[in-house]
Length: 222
Image 1 (cartoon, one colour):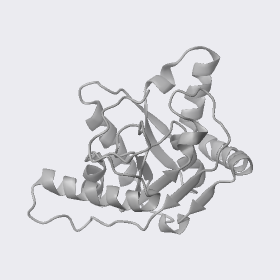
Image 2 (cartoon, helix red, strand yellow):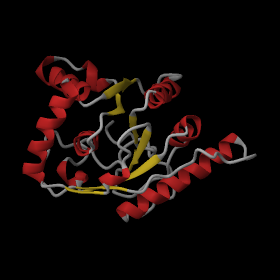
Image 3 (cartoon, one colour):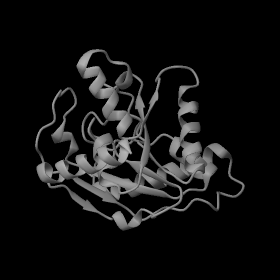
Image 4 (tube, one colour):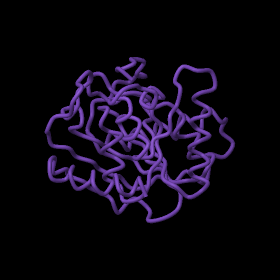
């Protein structure tokens, strides 16, 4: 109920203030498991996607968003919890694997799980190489991957900005990618790399971003 209320109110307010362009919602299945794989430009991406998608979403967020103190800390915790975020302790041994297990459980129950294959926000607007967690989820669960292209969110809340600004936002959902047939006799690592690269290529076609050609190892304030 909290999620539905937060999404309904937030979506209405967001549409009035930002008048977002949302394309391709028909590509998201009405039921059943699906993985949303998006580029990552801003802190507010994790607000924009849940408000744009009519189904309930789960996504990962760093544990610090849930552990703050004072009024701001309580507001952050309430906001991320209401939007379906799952806290993850980055840098802790086994943390990444535990995060993927959370995603697999949610997908097994027929849910929508959102992930940023780049791992963290782009520091310069380019699209960085995807990490293979998205492929692990897709190949293990058999769930389709819907690529998501975000544009304009970096102007709403640039890296380092405390408060959001008013700027046009575009969210594009691409056609689902089906990897349920697997990759035959390919080694696991090779199969995951190919799947991840295909997902990132689909995201790039939606955004038109310049490809960095390397991993994003910058913390980007996250």
